[in-house]
Length: 308
Ligand code: NAP
Image 1 (cartoon, rainbow, N blue to C red):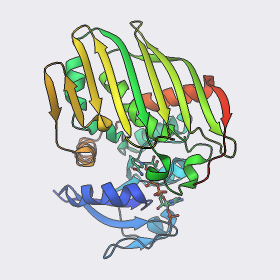
Image 2: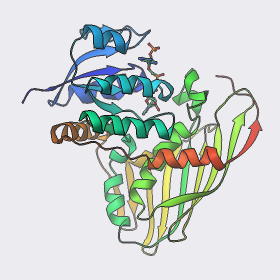
Image 3: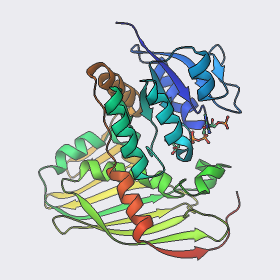
């Protein structure tokens, strides 16, 4: 079977760190081009300044991995789908829920595969956590995602703009795990979003959810963390406490600790190839819905200005 010819649109941090090695490590794909307005691209790979230039001049692509900031994603995705090109959308899949629904309908109509990727769901501890929790009664959940924005997002202006999500850019990863491992749906009850006075997106948030069985789920997001960083989810159950740490990589169960291999992006590309070969899409907007609900229902507090 011929490899799927794939182009990366938006050759920034995540594309270079994760997409390029994952594509090169998967024989189902062949990287044919990269696209970015300012970047020079990769040694030995054709590079174009825009998606329109790629679509007009080639090289031909069967699939595109869209790794731009979310604010520009819909227009690019829609133009690619109009050509029947399969699409891998980095998280979050769009800047609004309605545009993701429109892309899903468009992909369906043209028979292209659309994959709204949630990389944290492929972290090593997540599948075993989901299996273990499926048989437990959930009593209480605590999600603590505290990191230093200056370390992880230096100079990323788009992340502070409307649609950039601010601290929910990493926080949505926690929600992608929680919506996948917890056996019941959960809903937002109240939220406080803390915005620097010079920015349009939150630097911290405190959110109370409750699941359909009545268990409280608390989420603490903060980008002002110095020292040790936390990407932890604790789930108290009738059979003891489960802890997922390091963004889902390490799983602690009452019976002991499991640390699996990091397969996040290899797992995503394996799944994308399966979707394309099987003529299917995978678009789960549950994490983005909860973030949208926080912006819809949350109280705003203004704090000190933030400068990179
Ligand atoms: P980034 O470093 O700012 O890279 C964004 C890239 O998109 C840049 O190369 C930029 O090109 C390009 N771009 C912007 N507008 C474009 C357009 N209209 N057409 C083509 N390319 C365009 O951002 P990032 O950190 O890689 O994040 C990108 C996405 O991946 C975000 O949704 C983020 O949430 C997600 N993500 C990031 C991480 C992470 O650790 N950073 C992890 C997982 C997922 P120029 O520089 O040439 O302008």
